[in-house]
Length: 102
Image (cartoon, rainbow, N blue to C red):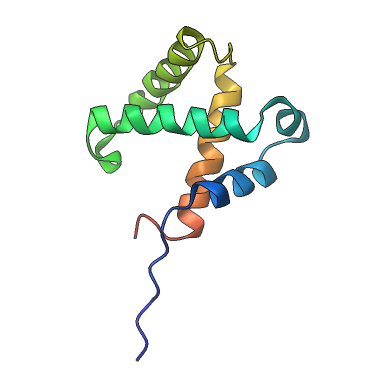
């Protein structure tokens, strides 16, 4: 029996997936570099908290606040919490599509 091929997280594929996932108005609002930057901030947040599976639901608000605060401090831009959630949801959908959490 053939073993299931393990898929690895690919940033470029994630950005493509997120672009297809986002509503049209957000596709035009964020560059690929913006999306990658925001995903990097989310990863920093997750690393500071430990395992992703152990995050509490309240941590989603803290994550969004962390991303918004750091993006503003780094001079990247001022982003809306709803927009950030769309990007993070798109990344989660990408991860699920490649069975990353299985």
